Picture 1 (cartoon, rainbow, N blue to C red):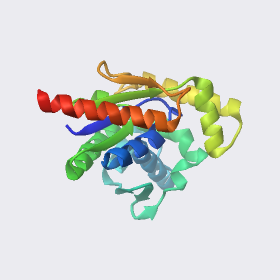
Picture 2: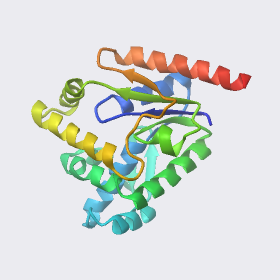
Picture 3: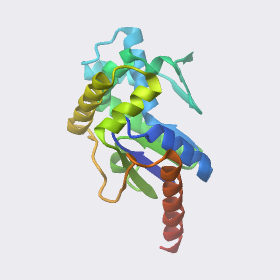
Picture 4: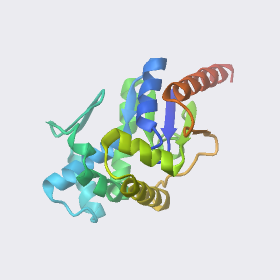
Length: 218
């Protein structure tokens, strides 16, 4: 499948890098994290119990998510800025751990890729679960300090508090029962700690060119 799967923990630079890779190789970009944040937005909007997996799953099945470039609409409401708030940050990992929610999001992600005939997709289970046959799988990581500092530079805040929040998010993502954050055995692991964005983007684009060429030969 003509998919570049970009996985990794919070603060590793997935969204920025995947978006630039998509532009460089001429493919559409899908931010799956924004989809889960969109469901979190709907949960808070409708005062649904975030711990009730079935209730959140039902909401996910009827919530209309529309992604376009960097924008997200939830049931027709522009939620682009709202999904990046502390309120959403506080609940999205809980919501994303619910199996009914993940099942619905996976279906929507696969439908999106089929409609767009491929794409660059970033998330936490893209190469392992959603698109295990992706032509290229990349796992981005960085040291905890670097990831915390990037979040501070991006949105401000206290570095120690953000580091603690990232560690908590890492724990939830890597220990959930349904499609936890793990490195696919055939992923290329890239530590971005000491690399510029352009260096990482160029590396992934080159790997994709090689992977596509190899796919044509097999």
